[in-house]
Image (cartoon, rainbow, N blue to C red; front, side, top):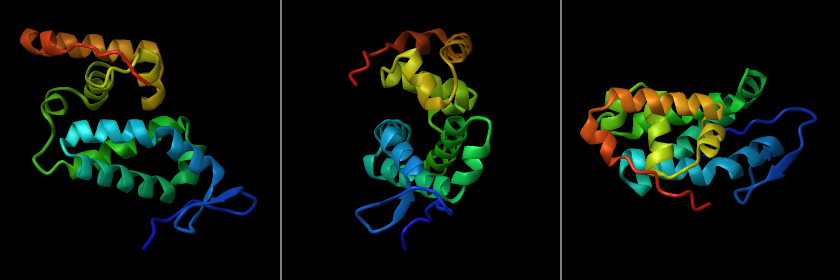
Length: 160
């Protein structure tokens, strides 16, 4: 059974390969974020297949609540929270070490910026926040983590 799709009267739609019609704004959002979400999920769960399942689960939940998400104060941040919950559910062994040691927003900023090599701006765009907030999350994370862990955090250049 295909995941629920968000549609309503007067909303432009796009027919996907599976014949499911999604509103253009939802389809565009999925296309824009899918690759980065998949990288993040794969890194968090340590497995490509489980990571992809988490992303699919997040998109299905997002589709169900798309109208509410769009009416909310920050659709990208709302979608990011849905992805975070989906990844956490798919991580059978419990939270990864960073997410076990830090608040979710700080751990996410560390994963995206240091582990995936994203710029502050790209990290902020994906999380639905702004670069100064990401910078604050990173500073707080660095202050909270043991020194030997902070030394292992090396930002790789963003290649996309």
